[in-house]
Length: 190
Image 1 (cartoon, helix red, strand yellow):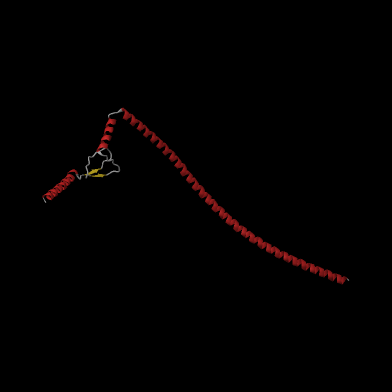
Image 2: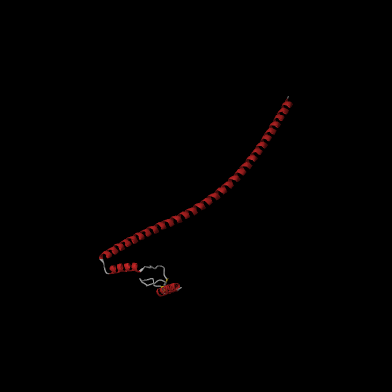
């Protein structure tokens, strides 16, 4: 029984010490970061809350920060190797910037040419469409006129056929009258 009391006491002390540890080392501070224009370092512990009120932030642990800070200080102190490296890097950035600018210029020229081509093509298509509509109207008008001419020709042909029949009837009648008159003359003369 004494052993269980000691064991319960040890467990209770362990639980209380863990609770105190979490309370002591967890600060629960709220840090609001609003300045995005400079380099700042904030000491933050477990349990602290950060409100970052801009779009980009780098969060580093102490070891990485120390490495970056040492490199920054060596560049500031004028280390010739790092200065040369930074100069080369800067020249490379300038070269890439000039290449990007020339590519942007080529892109703008190409885009202008393309826009001009689109405009000219659209204009050509509109003119062609207008011309096709005019041609369709002309063809419709010509077809209508041809149908009228065909109707007039058919009417004229039927009138000519009728007149030819009339002339043939008159010619046959005249021939018959002529033969009859000639026969009568021969009969009278005989």
